[in-house]
Image (cartoon, rainbow, N blue to C red; front, side):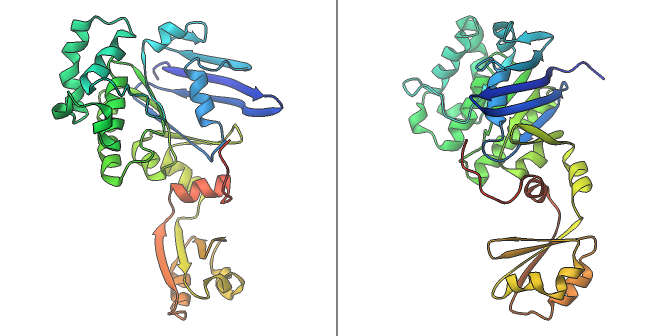
Length: 307
């Protein structure tokens, strides 16, 4: 196997008495997309900040391209592309000017950047918006421009912190298409996301964080097979919650309740579905287990406040 493009070993970060990252280790191989998922406050953004040298770990090591962070921060950043949660585009510059100015931060010559701008705008489906300012763009266009800007220096590794948050389904799918193209080109991606369909679609491997600790790691389908029953039956409607105490519970391996919906997790849904036929007032959804089920099983259904 090729040597890892990014290696994080035994990382630890504390703020006061609070441990935000606790003995975290992972690697990213060339051409791989590693997804980091977890509840609010799990440590996802803090991990990315340390990988960028914006925050110094209290313990552990970060190695990228054979270099050490933060000692070799400038040399590492020269090979990174970054898309943050928040929009950091310059509102006073056009799309093309945003790319030009950003490229200069990497010491690139103006002629070299200008040569790359048409292809980057085409990649972002923004060719006809070259002279438009960010304020004239939709949310999806802004995110695609941020991605194009992150590619100005032709990075080997992209760090994407929830890159599709706030986008409508069409804009998210277009963003996914662009990210898949980058993976096909051999680029590596570290992706944090709250969208489980995004994680399953894009990621080679997943890292599940909770309270700063790694609680699971592996390929999406492997994790689902390891931690979950194959079938899920969702039941909702008047009287659904009463089923938790009914004999139907014995037909499932595990039962969970969220709001007005009862989730039955089972190895074989047929007996349960037959029994539910006696409750015509209820609505049911039979589906295979997915990453959202995995996320909720490993991290719980309780809503977390931002940390």
